[in-house]
Image (cartoon, rainbow, N blue to C red; front, side, top):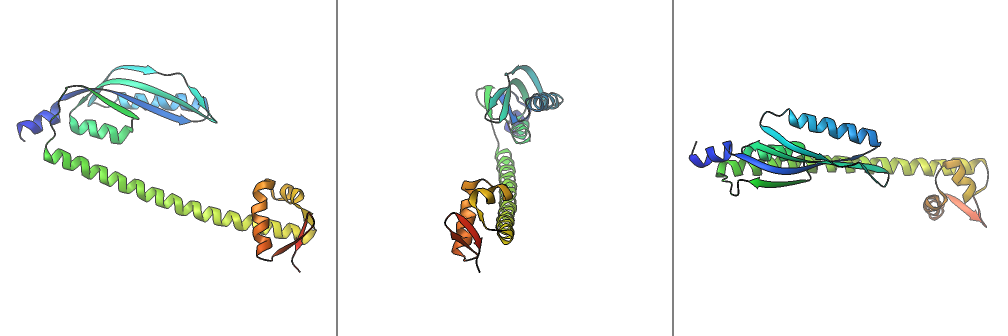
Length: 195
């Protein structure tokens, strides 16, 4: 190992980082961030010098809380690993002013980054496919509910909304599509099955 590698691998790096959690209910967010910080403190390759806990703040229907940590991390490899493992929202290197990173360290970092980006991409694609499948099936369920309801009797949009549980404005999209497909008909404000 070269001198530069030793310096980067074994240098003590002082940094400030922010860890944030967003969720609900408020008690879950507060408990989760406390447990997360306790987990970080158990890491033998870093030392938490100080921590500042924000108050929990409501953001829409969710709660947000952050903790700012002042810590010392052993080496650039651990610093990069910390960022990947704990996903801080920000990281500021305080000391040393200059860090040396060797070609193998940079290569490892870039390969780790690429692997994680590929994993994230795979998860996003999988979630999109699942979401598309759910949307397609939900649309079919709503269309079927409309048709079944209209088999029983002629109904207006308000009545269809109550039966299907879908808000009138959103239900209009489905009704218009079924009208265009000639599956249902409309007379005045009343819908019925195409005959």
